[in-house]
Image (cartoon, rainbow, N blue to C red; front, side):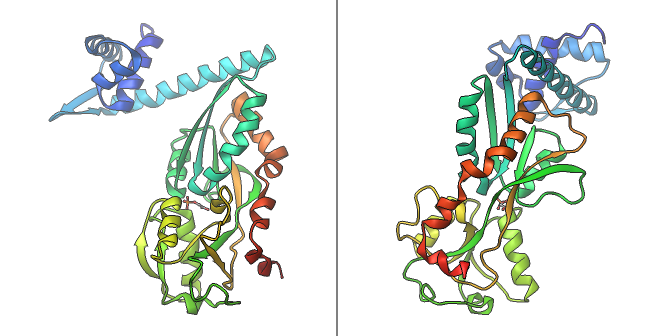
Amino acid sequence: MRQITLHQLQVFEAAARHCSFTRAAEELFLTQPTISMQVKQLSQAIGLPLFEQVGKRLFLTDAGQTLLVTCREIFERLSMLEMTVADMKGLKQGQLRLAVITTAKYVVPRLLGPFCQRYPGIDVSLKVTNHERVMERMAANLDDLYIVSQPPEHLDIQSHAFVENPLVVLAPPNHPLADAKHISLEQLAGEPFIMREPGSGTRKVVQELFDRYEIPIKVKLEIGSNEAIKQAIAGGLGISVLSLHSLNLEGNNGQFSILNVEHFPILRHWYVVHPSGKQLSVVARTFFDYLQAEGRQIADLKNALEWSAELAHFAQ
Ligand code: PGA
């Protein structure tokens, strides 16, 4: 195995990630026969086949899966070495891999702006997906840091809450309950609800609240995107629960009313999280510290909380 080269591992990793020699060749600007040859030599050095072809599809064998895990560990180590050496030279550079829940996409890019200006050598890869997928990515150790509203209880993790994330009930402005005060959950039972997809943290917390009071939710529409949900509310299809931050960018503009419902807003936080055992790269540690020190101030929830007079009654 000592004959194995880094180049072969790079080729193999790309082929395994794409499950395709052709796409690996495109990505690495190599020819398809070169990819086949490198994978063949690697598999000879390992002594077992790495891929198997079933029909037209390519699958990793067990040996291939194991090699892929090792490959990722080697590349992660190398990139940490690069960052540590850059840090010794007084530079912060390398890649920061973040996976964040969908509600955080309204704030994380704004946090990244000043961060990347301060550290121009840092490149960011930002994966935005729902709570369940972020948890899967954490379990597979795919990213440096994760931003979630509900840190996992069953994993040993380090976390820090850096910004509030209140969830509110949104309705179209002409909704009959728009001016009502202290709306009960029972009153919402008959309302057509627009729900996020299963696996969403927002959905889970809404469902748990209604389940706790044994009130059924009439789900009219299920959509996997906060932005599409906003359009559906504006289009009069129903009401929904979304993060207040989802209104922050463009403000309310009279498109929505925030209903004054008991138990709302659901006050949550965003946490930056990583598994305790994970050795953070210099870049990831720098971002973690930055969120702790400056996250709240830059995300500036105050703007979000202040734009709407309708929210004032929650403060009373
Ligand atoms: P979601 O997460 O994007 O999975 O709904 C939001 C949250 O958990 O607050």
